[in-house]
Image (tube, rainbow, N blue to C red):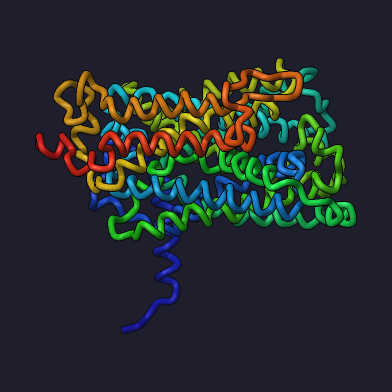
Amino acid sequence: MSHDPQAAPTAAAATQERILSTYEQRGIEPVPTDEQKGNPLDLFWVWFAANLSILGIPLGVTLVALGMNVWQALLAAALGAFGSFAIVGVISIAGRRGGAPSLTLSRAIFGVRGNIGPTIVSLASRLGWETVNTTTGAFALLSLSTLVLGTNPNAKETPVLALVCIAIFVACTVAVSGMGHAFLVLVQKWATWIFGALNIFVAAYLVTTVNWDVVLAAPAGPASAVIIGVGTIAAGTGIGWANAGADMARYQSPRVKAGALIASASAGAGIPLVIIIGLGAVLGAGDSGLASAGDPVAAVRSVLPTWVAIPYLITAFGGLLLSNHLSVYSAGLTTLTLGIRIKRVNAVILDVVVTTIGAIYFMLIAESFYGPFITFISLLAVPITAWVGVFVVDMISRRTYHPDSLMDLRRTSGYWYTGGIEWRSTFAWAVAIVIGYLFSEAKVSDHEVWFTGALAETWIGSNGLAWVATFVIAAGLYAALGGARAGRRDPSAVSS
């Protein structure tokens, strides 16, 4: 039998062409077992691509501003990024088991009505991140236009150009997110190599501009700064993605090991995050003015020569776009989980309309958004970690989810419970949120404090551990109420 060396490449090319032309028809309904054919490497590339964003630079600068030296900042970045995305990996296990998005599976735990609260929080988180991505991506395009075409870099003075930049970013997002899972996975994989290479090029130049004597001479900060830093990174990275863990994993093969799912998320996101956050920390330590800049990303751009600034801005745009692809796809599924009866692609369009309006506000009206951005993600970390605490405890004994009950919002659903609400999980979630905010302080700057919790000055509050306390309380209270055994007596399984 002769062997054609071109047969395999041709088959691979045909497969990629088929994927690129495939439009995902499925919404939030569980994926049949015979269609779950994914592998952990797919998820590795998805999470890697989604975290190539230059928004890691201001996070790194923030660590230095907290008083850490660069070695402490790297430690905080590693613990916060790898650790928080390990949680994303744990939630991914539920996606493989149930074949449905995270918040759809959450109906089995909170009830079809009780799940509305966690779903709204999740959607707010996704829309918040997308607004930041869109705004920053549009600013990157505006700066690129200034360098290449000589246009005015001030968005408020060139509103039409600013709107065009927003429209380009949004169109590129919808083109991928609207197509669906298979298309998104393929694009994220190959785009990772392209924008990863550009990131390396820009980073290599930036490190040559750093005053290493100043960086290496910086004294170590207190241990409390590292603890706060870990929390800041966790809240700004993996915690924000935790409730999207199952969205991509629902196509994973039932044969995939749980440990492989956790490793794919943790390593896939952790590697690029530590590199980019570490770069931000080095830049911040070498230039004290960067830590006080209202827009650290733009501040970095201002010190670059044109031949580096252009690839820097292209990298910025591409990295933000890759993050937005996944976020918008997840937000579309979350929107459908609220019970809105529209097609998945229309849910995607609805979500980007909201984030487009937000981007227009931040570009043309607001003075800045990085301070509010850090505060916003810190606040959302509380209800999200409360949800994670309840969800993970339920996973202890739950191995299956009933497909029909997940999709039934009526009294006939096996997940109707009492009035549509599973009161134990909902009570544990609500109590944990209240206590978490008591330990929190929403502080944009010394002159702008949104609120201060009654316990914010305690050791837990002052060390930025409100989200940890929230997780422990939610998980502990739900377990005490019998949550760890809930999956074993799934009412939908009994009724079926």
